[in-house]
Image (cartoon, rainbow over all chains, first blue to last red; front, top):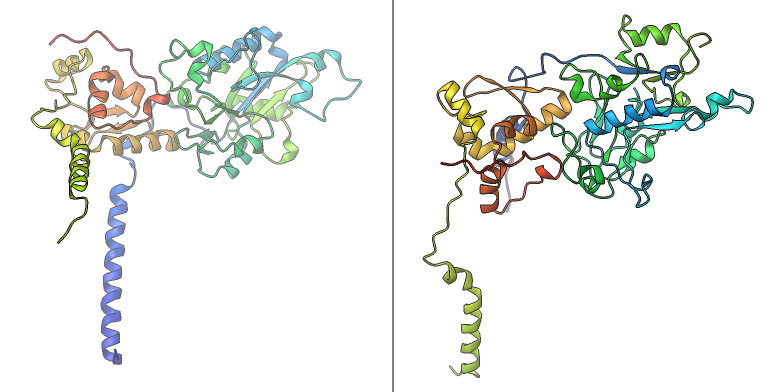
Length: 278
Length: 142
């Protein structure tokens, strides 16, 4: 079939008009499909806001393992974290899920120890949790954007999107993430119903970690661990706000962070020594 | 036209049709009970008394057709954008965007509400793998 120039241009013109039409139609379709937007939705008025939530852990205020156990229990109770035990009652290390946990100085701050350091410090139990990094490697590697940064600096995860690939666990230098190898509701403490009916549990095959209690912050409450800790042991606030308590401590006293040399920008600061020589 | 093994073939066809059409003739004349999701929980009745009518987040028709889309949007708004409150298009009231702490506070009868239609339609949403369902109360006397 032969075609003269005039006929070719006609057809080309009509098809491009049709093409634009289709584009507009599909754009309208996307508008229908798109999510909700303010002012139809709004944040809870009681909610606390920040640019970057941060925590100061004052280890001198923790008087031994009991205090740390209390904090861990408060967190895990509030978030339906399963407690998998071996038949002999010890923690099942393979299935263990931890949001906040007890560790040692050497494990929390590898490279900071030396052979002459205070014995007490070496033996002292430490608290560790997700550092809610300002440059989180877990977020960078997540293929589904299931883990992401909230605008208040919290490294959050969307369990609905998690496909359980565990890249984030490999990326996290703090071991802050745990994988649900089996249905968490099979754990002893959740078998007869969850510990907190206001909060969801998780399913098998997703990775979970501390969320800085984002759901409590949005309801105007401090994180569960902060409330359960001895007075002043866990301080929580906006590190970007020069008037906040955490910022004042971080500015005025010597604090250390876990593995800052990796460039992750952790937001959990530790005060190690006592009040006198920190 | 000559058909070899006419008898066997006819028998085969009859047997085949008997199997293939079994679901159809087996259900002829049987009435399939319509799902009747119940909206008469104490919480909803209390709402009705307070506001004079039963109201949901949106109109009944919209909820019937679009609740999955609505829940998807709610989930994204809450988890990813930290919005917690939703203003209804149909009645202007504010609602907490939450399955466990919103929807199911009124619809405290998951078995007679959610499951009623979901079972009928044979859909298995995985909401309850993680989200905690309300404790079922005694069946409300009608």
